[in-house]
Image 1 (cartoon, rainbow, N blue to C red):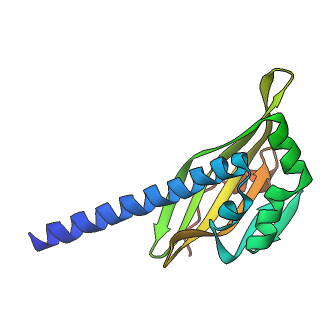
Image 2: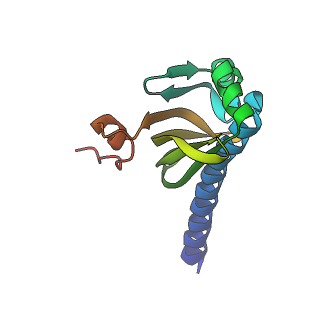
Length: 159
């Protein structure tokens, strides 16, 4: 009976971790759309990094917040936009996790919405005292390049 309880407790813990990670990733989109740069930056660890291939790499809360406060993003919000993320797959190894999935940025233009950016994402997360936080997010346009596709590939086991 004790073994069954331990197994059940571990399974529930894993489900809670996955839900927390998925919630964190979903929160990114809503914070980006409402322009709350400071709250968005707090999704990352203090020294976390956000790498947008071909655009920018930001490290640390201030630099990540600056991406949302930048004129390009503010203009996108002013015209109407939606950051849609997920669903994501989540692999957890103790206090570290990797999530992989898609993101689409929609822009309002001429009375309709159009997909502005469709990207692959790989999130590396760590468990902190404050909960799960992003250590690194890599984002690349799904433009046919091998590197972008590999962000979606499962981690290969060590040999």
